[in-house]
Image 1 (cartoon, rainbow, N blue to C red):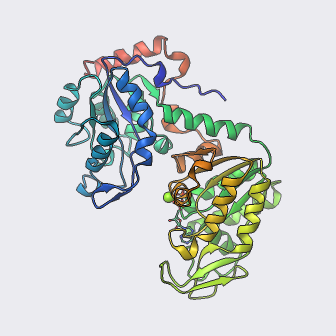
Image 2 (cartoon, helix red, strand yellow):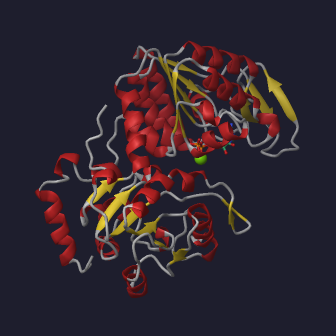
Length: 416
Ligand code: ADP
Ligand code: MG
């Protein structure tokens, strides 16, 4: 499958300032980066740009602050990135503004400036044109390597991309290529495994998967929306009320669909979401009062593993249970092992699914481990990602559009 957007590989960057949108939304613990997978995933693009003599201005969001929040500063990220690159990475005191512009203006070839958390600016999520304009003033070119945020139309992922010549980073390009190839031409049967806790987000995707997949296997907290819609008792399980109506609709559609919607047949229950809670295996799915479903049971896990083993393509998003707790990890482990051992082409998306695979030591046995959870789902569904759509078409790289964009940039006040 061809990727029709302009690539950073074709950008003339020597002596120019490049604003790079990265996905450094990493977990922090005690003021340090706990897992630097996402930082390392962007290294290829960063190294390429530095080697070609560009000055880099990096921007990412981190968590969900609603304004400046010292606990979600990019400071630990800048430190970790500096260690990985072996150079000093300067941290800007804000996302935009005169001081940031001054710092960006002083960068030489190979220098790296990290902007503060983009969500310190309320205009980020509202895709405020003024914020986009001030971001564009920091650089001559824009590169988006944040696949994990490409499904959001924010100022750093979409707004600014329309104001500068905009290129795809190496990671974003590879993500789109790998996922699109499987979406458009999967080896059958295509088996989709959906779990996790973000039920409303994923239930939307399920509607689409019932059209394109041969089987959709459901685990995680998501199954309780389906059970609830069927009138089955869910006890204290995590039920997304909004998801229940959608689940009912999907169950009706599934009856008419040629693809199979598969729900758990047994569960592992706990009293509460706690490592030391009382545990009960349930051969069935009627959850009694005072209990919550926290994992799929062994019969379900074996059935899912068999389906994965027989598939031509597997797309997995979302753990089968509260795998962070040992008592409720077996279902996710069984699915992870089946996916790792499958002869199928295997794709996995979602931060927690990736963390589970890494914890089981199976991450390197997946064909494509996506850095995007929501983004990989939306792409597989067949939706257009705003962060990708905003990039220049590859055919325009040497064409007039680039010139026009460069001119526009001169007008917004960057002197290159
Ligand atoms: P991903 O990051 O892979 O997209 P999600 O963020 O949607 O996945 O969900 C992951 C979280 O879902 C995990 O923290 C896991 O503990 C939780 N989870 C899975 N199943 C259950 C369940 N039955 N009850 C409560 N939480 C669950
Ligand atoms: Mg998650």
